[in-house]
Picture 1 (spheres, rainbow, N blue to C red):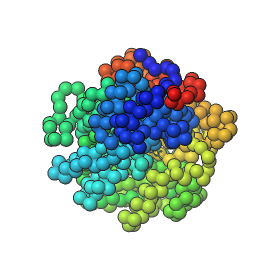
Picture 2 (cartoon, rainbow, N blue to C red):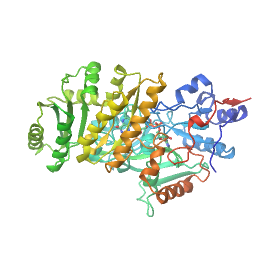
Picture 3 (cartoon, rainbow, N blue to C red):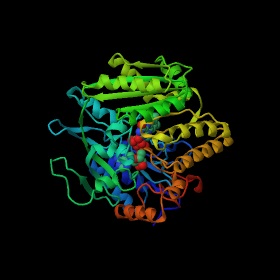
Picture 4 (cartoon, rainbow, N blue to C red):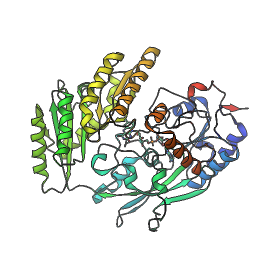
Amino acid sequence: MQIDRPVTISSQMVDALCAIVGREGVIYGEEELLVYECDAYTIEKQLPNVVVLPRTTEEVAAVVKLCAEHQLPIIPRGAGTSLSGTVLAVTGGVMIALTRMNRILEIDYRNRRALVEAGCVNAWVTNAVKSRGLLFAPDPSSQGACTIGGNVATNSGGPHTLKYGVTTNHVLGFEMVLPDGEIIWLGTRPDGGEEVDGYDLRGAVIGSEGMFGVVTRVLVRLIRAPQMYKTLLGVFESVDDASCTVSDIIAAGMVPGAMEMMDQLITQAIEAAYHFGFPLDAGAVLIVELDGLAAGLERQAERVIEICKQNRAREVRVAKTEQERMDLWKCRKRAFGAIGRLSPNFLTQDGVVPRSKLPEMMRFIRACSERHGLRIPNVFHAGDGNIHPLVLYDERDPDQVRRALAAGHDILSKCVELGGSVTGEHGIGVEKIDFMEKQFSKDDLDAMRTLRRIFDPENRCNPHKMFPGSKRCADFAPRKQIAA
Ligand SMILES: Cc1cc2nc3c(=O)[nH]c(=O)nc-3n(C[C@H](O)[C@H](O)[C@H](O)COP(=O)(O)OP(=O)(O)OC[C@H]3O[C@@H](n4cnc5c(N)ncnc54)[C@H](O)[C@@H]3O)c2cc1C
């Protein structure tokens, strides 16, 4: 079954939802629903019929059961920071927002793990344990807003993915409400139960973009914070030189905690917004963060400086204090926020290329920007070859929207051509559905559909994402939200 018509919801259904989560936990007025019409991929928009804000797993399960009885789509949602339309209510439906389930329930320092509710904001976990020298490693740039449930559903990475891996490497297990309302636990249990034997269904759900169920509680791994950081800022005349530096550092046998690149346009916007002291005329700047045991870190930093200089770095600055290091990261992590100075709208692309192909990819993006007549600044996780070109456009001009989509399409096609992938961390959502057949064979896609049906036989959980043949928002005429 595939829901392929606009959903209507009766006022009795709204009353039934209110009976479960309380009237203050149900949003159905058209104006209030506007907040939920899209995520950070703003090109496509569609209102859910109703948003519910449960406070407990039992409330989530009761809402999901009710929706199953009425054959309604459910759309799990965290903070709505997804950049590929993964949280769009394509046909309408009942959006289940986890933002009131945001507590850290338990911190087990002895075993270095924490049990959190799915709506807990990513950065809150590290903030809660840093005084004890621990941290939660996945650090998406959106970590001040995005939720652990959203991280699980998109298998989020971040600047420090290069060394520490992505969400799946730091989630031990979680509780999930299946689309029929059953509550299950996958992976390691919080009561200290051993790793379960058999298939790694925990791993299968991580990255499934909210299509397998609603995650409600997550057991995360905490790691020891590095003894020392050495954070360097290389200033380069060109993106090519900075890109070659990235490859050379890895080729020299070092794995920095992070290597992040920003080109001239984004560096200028960041400087105007946050006043760090970035040079405005540099072609690119590269942040290299080395971390680990203090012994040996100085030597590694010297080697990185050498490699930067070999690649014609104009200067290499070393953060002298922890405050300076934090300020530098603040600028990097708030880079997207600075784009408002350049353009009313932007389309964030998320592709991957082999690291050695970064110079070629960056040249292609420059040519693409000229061909489509749109500016495309770049800020990205260079160490992973995970690019984030930001295509600037004005949504009030339909031709610019068309050109932005065309530029995004060209960039992702080039990633595939260079042996990379159309997503490093933001997922497929609605944005990249058309690329699935380019990256995967029919058999691959059938296997993915089969796996999905095991969890969600009726295709009601976050429908019309990821798979070719899915409907788009444009396929549905405007509809009345709540039937009388
Ligand atoms: C400025 C900015 C910077 C970003 N930087 C990064 C980055 O460095 N790395 C990175 O990986 N991403 C990044 N992102 C993308 C985004 O923040 C991540 O994908 C994040 O994990 C989404 O979390 P969220 O809580 O906002 O989820 P949402 O956007 O609400 O949802 C995302 C997906 O998760 C599903 N979902 C949410 N909660 C649940 C749940 N409890 N159970 C089941 N499914 C659920 C939704 O259905 C949807 O499919 C960035 C976004 C922005 C706006």
